[in-house]
Image (cartoon, rainbow, N blue to C red; front, side, top):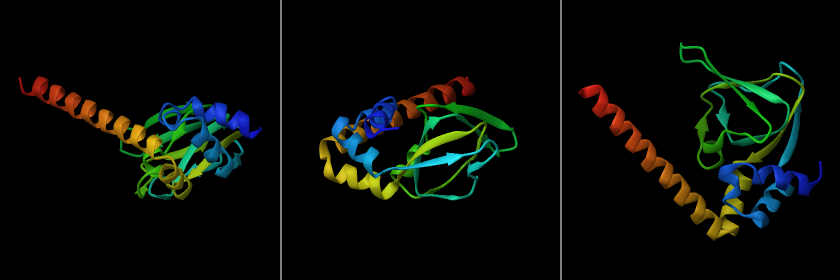
Length: 149
């Protein structure tokens, strides 16, 4: 795939779209493409995370080992590990390729350099994350109120 194709794919990701086309082009140029055979592990729960992945082709099964055997299937255009783009964190799930799959790996170092180089993009991302946090807090308060009554 070309850099332009990668930029189009990155624009499909809501969080990344906030950065703007120029910043996404820098991400696409600096990112690394990785391929995985069916059954290959992208990462395991407990691994230290140093970036995120955008599914370019194929799909992955995300398994959260929390005793409830929760699984999610992610496909093309999905960002896996969004928080790891910004802060050091351990993976909370295991991701396994369901078929031959490709990802665009964006390292935290690259992502943070892009944010430093594009302050307006960094502000848009900060505002979006703040809005999500407010919404999550509101949802928790509503659920708590319903459980208490």
